[in-house]
Image 1: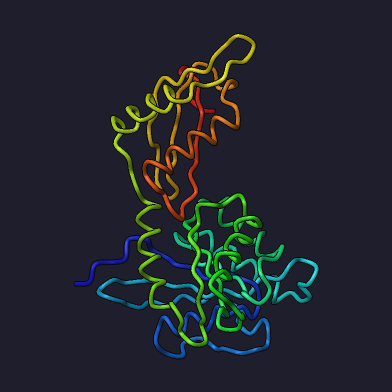
Image 2: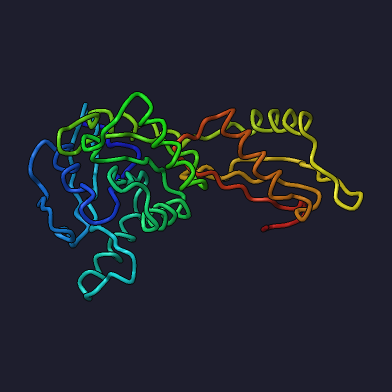
Length: 272
């Protein structure tokens, strides 16, 4: 019996006509989804089960999401709602970006929704075959993506062509990796040993003569990895030090493609 793919659902999202259905068909090796140059052809979120290298996947092709001002009819409104619900029940998101247009405001909204939902995310730049390029083009394009999506530096980037199949054979390999990162759990003893080292290397700043003390840390969950830091006074945990802790978690454990959630609690608190 085939072992189910542990990441669960993979959802492909993006604006209309970015190549979502073409990518699904290429991954499946057959024409399961209608492909058209007419934006909005896919109206529903379509679940498809398939198997690759002995692993089972469920992939969801969603309707293209326009910005609200361009949603003209009730059917399209329901398509957007179903797309957002597909993101909600997914573990790994393939966010398609049109190489000929770059990152748009709607791309930021879509991927921001997935980020806030704690989903594993891969940025997939499609239509790369249409770009005139040299040995610097890919690096420059990725730099621009990082500038536009500064809140999610953790997401890996792929450059593909759903039309020619360029690099598509690498997508599921990266999906497996991000799913694993998204589900990574750290031993409490290991975590606390490292936290003591991080605090020693970069002590928390003082505030009105008081210094933050991290008393204990534990991982509370996965998908996304969630860490609870018990401290003497949660108001002393400045945003900059929280970001420092997240950077140290990533440097030590990776968590590539996955957001990290940090919860700060006072020792005698039940909630933040």
